[in-house]
Length: 222
Image (cartoon, rainbow, N blue to C red):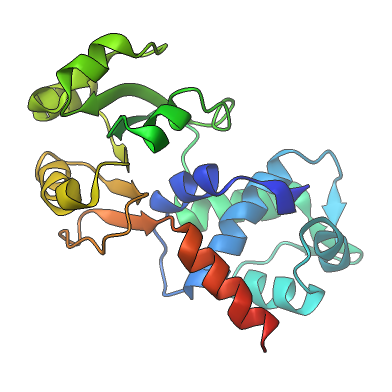
């Protein structure tokens, strides 16, 4: 189940994470995904062994991650599902209120995301798309408005957009990220191969197929 969750939705959720204490990145990602898993379960209690079955994470890793939250939500036969879910939401400031997003860059990757249905039912909603090619914004069809990047700041401000999915060409990535940060974007899902430099007030989640494959290869080779 959870093994098949898309990276796209995972990274959008990760951007909103604000924790009271320092939690390692891998643990943070697992715990954010765990909250989403629990939201879809009807079981009143869940064990670390059951979470292992659903995710592939070892039961020991699950217990260690949950212990980092410093919360008491255990039961004699596992964790109380509702209490654990609430603890995760509190610890990571996971909001169920609507949070608006935009896509910046409507090339091949951006066009794929125009019809992405994976965040339906989540608190995130894509409300705008941007591209430097005006013709592209006029030709492409989408359920939300598409704008030239000259309107980036004004639309983000008027719509109250909090997160951006960045899919521009590499040569435009840094300058576009700087503009997004300057107009108050809280987080960027970075689909470009560039390492972005932005103020600490803007979080960045990098999505890279090459990095993912290299990581898998490293695990395979021990």
